[in-house]
Length: 304
Ligand code: ADP
Image 1 (cartoon, rainbow, N blue to C red):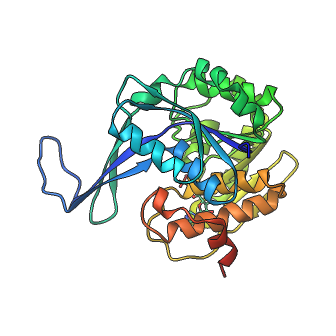
Image 2: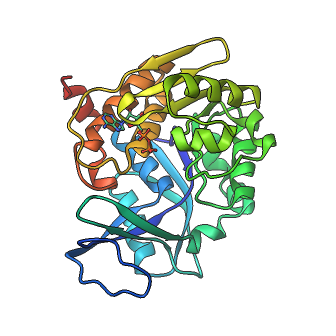
């Protein structure tokens, strides 16, 4: 079956070290444990959409190293179409993560092969995009490629989602006209709008600003408070299901993947937001990124 959700984005190997505390400059610490875990926001959202019911294709680049093989295999294991995952002469993207005993972390991301995602790669796999209903982008590949991917997906009449993560600066204004659903978290919404976002009221003001800048609809995710939907006519707040949070890594990625999968299955916006929120809530009850992402049957079995 052709993919109905296409993710254009990053694949990173997460190198996760646990240590009593974060090291200071020049210091060597003895850690507790180490694990390599497949990640990257693009790949995480692809896995989320696949587990949550979509036929998914990934457009991305990995390096010609062992991590590249593992990153691709992790997607293939989820039945994700990887014909548009190219192997390039570079190291795969990595995220060096240290987590301390208080769950504080410090992260260094090296783009590696993700930096080879050029607009030409999107043109090369135009047929993959054409087959899709929903196209998702994030910001862990070069800006020029994100902008081109959004524009091309819009030209092809797809439903276009941008999860502007990680964002610490405004987006190019010409991108907005191509975006159907802009899905930032609170800090991303603040960076994009230039306004503070720390409450439902300030989130409403920022969402209105992002719509005034040209985004079609905006969903600001608010952590345990759920999310705020804005369409330029009004707002709707969707409270998050109450769960015992263990690890919020990939909550946003799970929400985006679940929302996209539900839209591609023909659900309404409100149903898609509720579905994404149950999936994201389940993900925070489990440790890790990709390992924490639930399946469609987990969501269907969820009792609030
Ligand atoms: P990010 O992971 O990108 O920082 P958020 O923290 O806003 O994004 O979380 C994304 C979504 O995950 C939220 O909109 C919510 O639906 C869900 N979520 C996050 N934290 C919790 C929590 N503690 N309890 C329930 N749901 C949560």
